[in-house]
Image 1 (cartoon, rainbow, N blue to C red):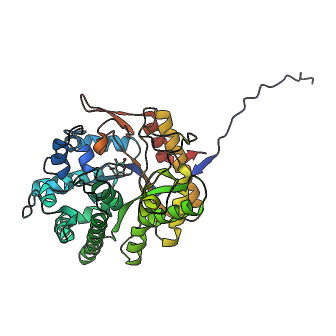
Image 2: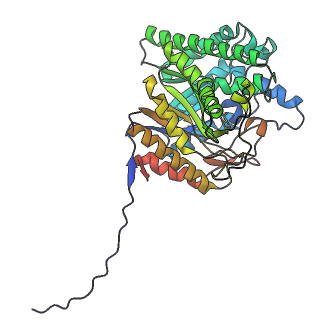
Amino acid sequence: MFTACLPIKTRRVIIKPMIEFPKDFLWGAATSAYQVEGDNFNSDWWQWEKTRPGIVSSGAACRHYQYFREDFALAKSLGHNSHRFSLEWARIQPEPDKFSDDQLNHYVRAIDSLRSLGIEPVVTLHHFTNPLWFSKIGGWENPQAWQYFLAYAQKVIQALCGKVKYWVTINEPMVYAYYSYLIGDWPPQKKSPAMANKVINNLVEAHIRTYRLIHSFYKKNKLIDPSVSIAQSMIAFVACQKSLRNNLAVYLRNRVFNFRLIEQLSRKKCLDFVGMNYYTRHLIDTRGWSWEELLGNTCTKKHDTLPKNSLGWEIYPQGLYDLMVALKKYKLPVFILENGICCDDDQLRWEYIRQHLKKVHEAMDRGIKVIGYLYWSLLDNFEWDKGFAPRFGLCAVDYSDYKRIPRDSAKKLAQVASNGLLEE
Ligand code: BGC
């Protein structure tokens, strides 16, 4: 039989290479109480905002205090299986000798709500803000600061212990000391290296004591092993041009800002994982040998090669990889507790997330154990002294009616979270 040979139209199926994350990987987003809850009028920031001309007030923020259930349901719908948030110390302990069961119960309800959705809570005890009474007695400059903090931590641990595995004691101790005590942009606006150092030491002491308290409490009550850390801000320091002085500046900044606390706390066996917050790189171009130059000077030349977020921070995913690899020697799992971008272009947001996730995966290939990746932030929110203009959220917030609108990037991340697969 004769069959005509007809050309067959073939459709080319392009199979895009995918990278795969482990099944037990934690996916989610992070927030902090003061930036989303609203009406934290017992906190030092609230008071400070009111007295600073030109500083936007946090006011109702995102009204997350009222809408936490809806927000957690939204996170669930976006495929999140983990969520980091902080407790507002000033709510829980409004006066030195008074704890509020009502407020503690609010956070118990928040955690129950997360758990009922199958979302693993990651609880931060301190995220930049303090009770007003605490700031009036010297805040973190007070040599007894850690004792006050420990009393608060104890109350919280008693109330939440069986419900929480992942604890973050202090968010970004170095960043807090830097902005509040070294360059004086944030309350209490001190500008003293000696003071900043004292504050860091008190924060470290608070962490160590709290770490031990959590562990002993869980052990005594035969609870699952807790996992406790700080959230360490890490910046990729890169010399603008190689020179002995610039290399020295890179080395010193890595030691002081990125690794000092991790080194110290891991030596004391007070870290169960490295909580890592990563956003950007700083280019360094020192012009002298003074400490100010070596530790403080950034490059002012125009290097417009990398895209930037709306605050002008460079997007540099390679830095995340390099820092993660540098953490390998501590032999601790890494948990990305914050990584995110503020921008008006949501495609750029997705590219940012994708590129950083690729670097996380690359680091995993190099043998770094990673617990999870939490994007900063679930919602657009109050960006401290920058007010509400920077938009970091996976979900846009319309501040006129507090509606949350998931962005496309949130949906794309949801897809990755649902099957652990990311397009290369
Ligand atoms: C802080 C957040 C802040 C974010 C973006 C982090 O350093 O923990 O509170 O909103 O950076 O600036």
